[in-house]
Amino acid sequence: MARVYISSVINAPANRVWSLIRNFNGLPDWHPAVAESYIEGGNPPDQISCVRSFSLQDGGRIRERLLALSDYDFSCVYSILESPLGVQNYVANLKLIPITDGERTFAEWTAEFECAKEQEIELSKKIGQGVFQEGFEALKKRFL
Image 1 (tube, rainbow, N blue to C red):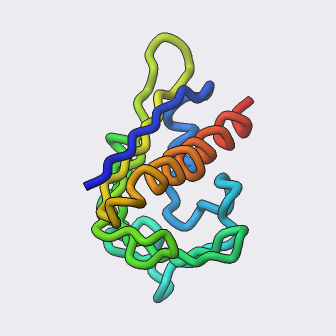
Image 2: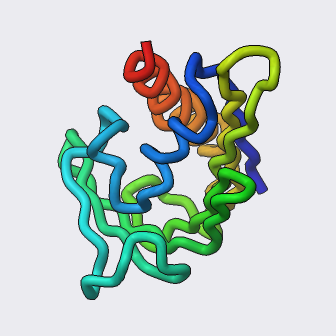
Image 3: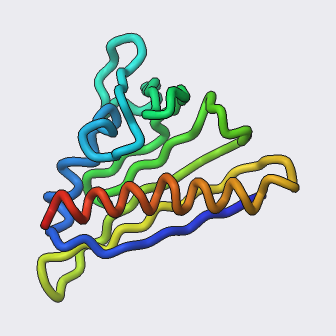
């Protein structure tokens, strides 16, 4: 099983960052790789088990299910149902931790998944740098 861990510091209070990312349908509002998104079946975007379907700027389509959402812990857990990445049993957690020394946020994004052994390093790098870190960089710019 492959594991990816990326962390960053965002110069904004955790509650402000969380207000932007807690919307499970809000990826196009802050992640530059996402073109458009919708919640299947018209369910609320904070309903556990809702499914978001989104297209990437490069034309790829991904479907993900919300597994957990905590306003108390500033965290969400989701799984990939369909994607062009070639991953199985993919579960990710995006979590924010308030930094009490200043109005900043420690953000961490993790994922575990299965894939073909020969793709593990490449996919881990693509997910870690191309998805998670790219999202953190966009959030940092948003809160300048």
